[in-house]
Length: 108
Image (tube, rainbow, N blue to C red; front, side):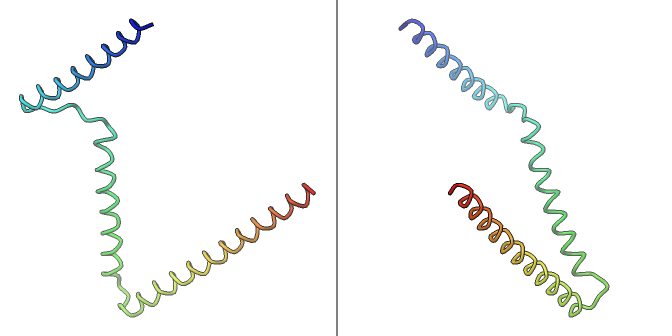
């Protein structure tokens, strides 16, 4: 049993040393490890999302409506969204209490 544990430890240590030494060699040569697709794709998606946000903001700023009318429309839309959110939250809370009351009534 001790030999098996010893060999597993040795294998892990050699693997870690190899990984560390490979990174050191690549650093000294001026190279780097190949990046995974996710490491390349996520920054591009972040930049794309930021571009969409900036574009939408600029579109609102340069809209053909007057600033006062545009701000009024945005304010109305946000208030409407807030009201719908409050209504949904209260519906969910009522539904949650109702379902708890039904489950309690069934249990009794």
